[in-house]
Image (cartoon, rainbow, N blue to C red; front, side, top):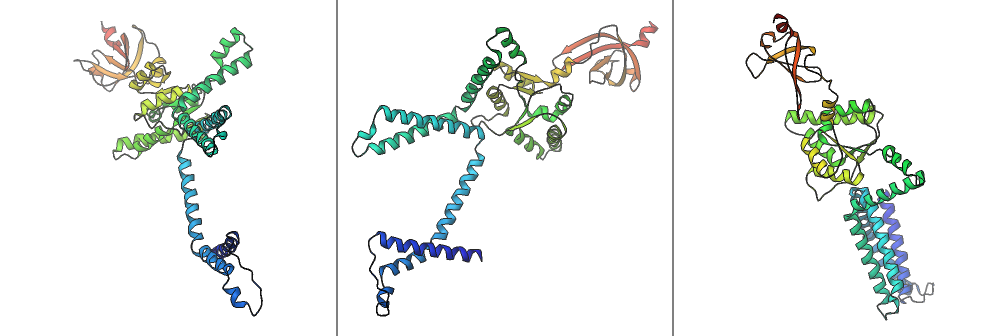
Amino acid sequence: MLTKMLKTVFTIVGAVIGYQMVDVLGLAEEINFSLNNIVQSITSNQTYGIVIGGLIGYLVLPVIIDNIFQLVLSFETKMEKIPFPDIIAGTFGLIIGLILGILLIFTFPLSSIPKFGLSLQVLVNLTLGYLGLNLAIKKREELFELFNNISGTLNKKSILGGNDDEEQLEDDNGKTPCKILDTSVIIDGRIADICQIHFIDGVLVIPEFVLEELQHIADSADVLKRNRGRRGLDILNKIQKELDVPVEIYEGDFEEIDEVDSKLVKLAKLLNGKVVTNDYNLNKVAELQGVSVLNINELANAVKPVVLPGEEMTVKIIKNGKEPGQGVGYLDDGTMVVVDEGKNYIGDKIDVLVTSVLQTAAGRMIFAKPKVAEKAL
């Protein structure tokens, strides 16, 4: 029913346009509406215009409208895929380009050129607008970084009034840098516990390319990888819904960069943020490029209780050590305890005396011996 109504409307619109076109083209004939001139009225140019226009409206206009509608939908879909930072940067570049075009036209009056003056003005504005838009999108990271630096400087001057001592205080206690999460720290899960006790402040930024990598892991055919990916998605869901922590999804991407780690470093530079990771290699690469890193493993090692030689502790021996007669146990925080002559106590909890502590990049290792053996001596 709706289709028939639309075709009727299109037919009427086409007939009206056809009648008007005959008049615009100067083909209209004078018609005397009478019974004697009825044949002349039917065969007049106006009638032909109405009939042809109506046929075009009925057959062609719906196709044209449908193609225009599909074109608009396609344009809207493409616009939705463009990252918001690109839209902001492109709009800014377009405005700057058009302003430069206007200034150039005022400086060099192109309109005075015969015949081609107006065309040259339009061409100059279109060219400079396109160049400004394209250049701003390609240099969006540097552009946003410049805006951030200018905004930070203006805020300091307006709030602090130029006092050097207060300016130093603002540097120390000003806006908290955002924390950018990588895939490893999301899958690890301890970031949720750290956020729950408010040990990390500021906005947590989760890049969309990290979410895509996490989704790819969750869809893996390997059971272990699939479980790790799903655990990461559960952790993100917990952080967003259960914890009082501001979370933002960064929808932009760096298509010229393939590696996710390199994208994280680039994003941290763009946002002046810190990367939160468990990845040792990412840690080193980020530090080399001047990006601050928060490593959960380093935090865990730093907060482990200090153990000194001669102290006593209780540990359960669970397996043999590498050397003959050694037994190995673990503390609640995962620290490995190697007990000399502890092989005979596998499966038992015993008191031990610490003999030495070894700190490595992988963590802390404690060497001890059974306290009962010490008493026997």
